Length: 470
Image 1 (cartoon, rainbow, N blue to C red):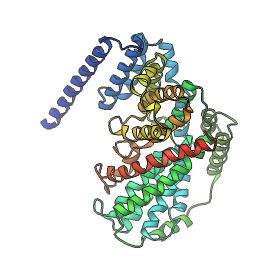
Image 2 (image 1 turned 180 degrees about the vertical axis):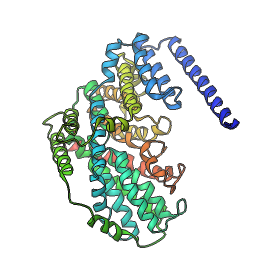
Image 3 (image 1 turned 180 degrees about the horizontal axis):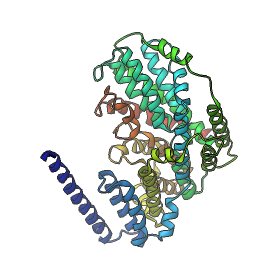
Image 4 (image 1 turned 120 degrees about the vertical axis):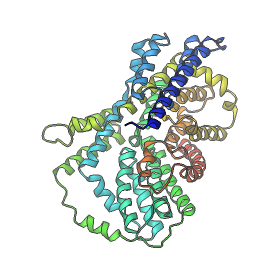
């Protein structure tokens, strides 16, 4: 017999969602029926209101996210904000192509065990001292996640770290070393994720939005010259913060010899490994040289994995592992964000809310933008929505004040990877299941890292501008 408490809980959840849904719909009608502010079109007013309602629905999951994303995209046409064809054109972009391709590359990387091979070699990089072992996991995690999707990278290194923690009798919830390790790996993966455009789909989303809105095309190499050094510096900062907050309870780590033994017992590289290495190496060359656009090079590479004679993955396997809801969320966020820009809503926001900060010094402006990018995740944990609203607004602000667009957009783009102040993103959740840390603990080191991140980000942007990188 079904537990009555469970039934009541489900019913209460239904009621809560209905009430929240009704409130959000009422909010839309209130916002669209008040007097339209000066300088804002009716369509712009509707687009801003619809984006607010959409974010509300996504955060509280009034209905499944995958369905609500399509609903709000279609409503752009139904509410006469922009034509439906235009809304759908903004929905499907290079960004989605790249993200799908990255997921294929990441799955093949894991399935052929190449990820585990690399992690076995890198995890013993700096010796047996406990503090250095932590660095041996965090730095390689960050490096690998600059060119591969963050989540698989965190899963691979997390699983190897868990074996070592068990061999050292690190008790979940009590071990400082276990806590630092299992928080450090996803933090490093998130930081590495902005190192290159390939590290995360939201990086490509940012580049795509800059191109669409401002006509500014940032190359793979330009992003990497700024993002990669910053990611490595912040990874080392994160490591230092963790060992100070959670000093390891022992000096040396046992069990690394087992890792080395496991490494020795690995079979030789086979044809599947060589196929992947060749295809991926050519893809990276295309990314850095710009020989082919990043999304095109990525989809060609992922297509090759399915070819007869290569057969590194099947569509059935791939289809089961693709987070379609996330894909749809990014598409809808971009469509709604572009609607705000195309209807003049972004310009109105820039003129109304940000006109005063445009007259401040460049350093202060960058500090404000970076701080907003970091701490906006506390109230809006939907990175794609933050980017699609903010990038058009910041573009207009930059153009109005004669500042290079990339200088004000990159701080918000880089900080979209800040997922450890409110660790509800899938990246930090990859290691929480091991039981070594709890949700309320990560914001402590996360806040310290974030403050340093703000300073490092501003310095990196200023240096890049002075050297003509952006």
